[in-house]
Length: 548
Image (cartoon, rainbow, N blue to C red; front, side, top):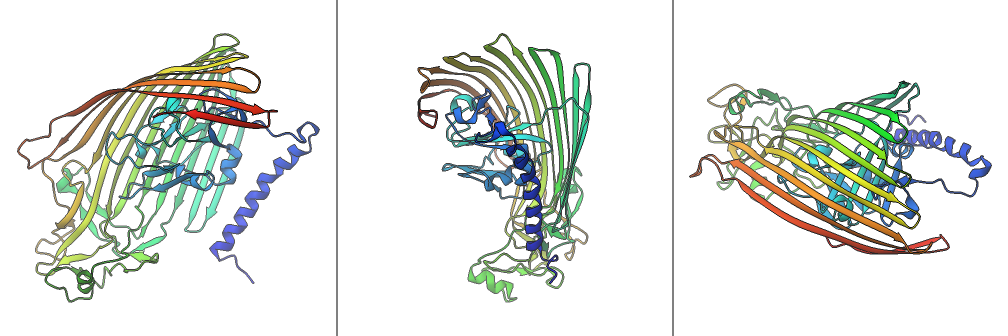
């Protein structure tokens, strides 16, 4: 019996092939005599210096490049499957910003300038806005998930933990690697990496990623045209509701350059860019009050005077607790996210036991999307025939940040020290595009089928300017570690941070033409102490105290 058409069987086949390919190098390594009976050393940077994972007093899940491929980790949303006590889910509202939950700390920083309980780092650089983490991984070398408070070294935005992503460095030798994946829903994913031979002190590598996938839910309101031009000053024009919901197309590029000027001095530059076009996930209807259900039947009571618009063309969303195959999200249109970042890292080995490291970075993310949050596409006011939106969303904005961190590491036989200073600046805007409502609630729309023919015209919010928040932060941290004996270590840590935040939002229709600037500046400190006791290098126990 041929079962290749069954998507479940196809998935099993793909997993079997993937597992077999990954197992081959493990078998080869196991045949080496000096490898028998010994675990491979896993090096992590959970304490901002390279250490064996068994010597780190932190609960860490480390994923190598091979493990990332084997487990099909393509974005932060995939980390839940391989990391204990971590849940990552796409956020509501159509923007796909991830929501983190780790060790009881739930974080979804939708409000501008808010701090999260789980922080994200890319090549040692903190990413402030959750929208800035919406991109597929182009070329990742290692992912470390640090569970539990990491306030001393990673700041008070890591009460629940931190996710640290390290990208690949160039090898300096010529090589080409090609990965290709095909799956159901017309999924195609291709990743190409080229390493160029070293020229003088320069080593260079370039990676390109293309990924696309059809959505898993049909849109019963597909083809509906919305005119955003008058409201946005034609920054956005006619947008059409898509055939499917959950589509995604990603193109990304990653460039890494390493400069080897001196044996004791390393300089590297990395650039990543990701361009994502997508349609928001489907929104269904699980329950409605009885009057509303009656309205869907075509006999609206006076308390709910709404009917479905053009029921033959735009059928209703099924009211069911089971996942539907199709919904009516006629206001939803395609969105886009563009993210890019620069990273310049310099490291100087001062002597055999001291190292200075500086990380200078800049990142920017731009997002635009419109989505239907109620699942009730196709409603009209029966008396006038005007389309009606219960709850819809227009989201546009950007996030840009730059930071500079200087680290100092000391590594002696009985003493280790990690210290550093960091300056961070962030500028965020989020809300509706200028001239549009961020949220449409109970809005009547003119256009096709009404006294004003043509595409549905999105209502204007004249004078509206989306909120803006600027953040400046300076911090100093220090964490000494004393090895009292070969089995007992003592660790202490301290971090002091000063934040300055100010925000502004233009609110049309109020007494004032705009709201006053709101600002806050506050220093705060974080402390950590701990003791490590090990027996025969087999069992380690850590006791830590880390107020956030």
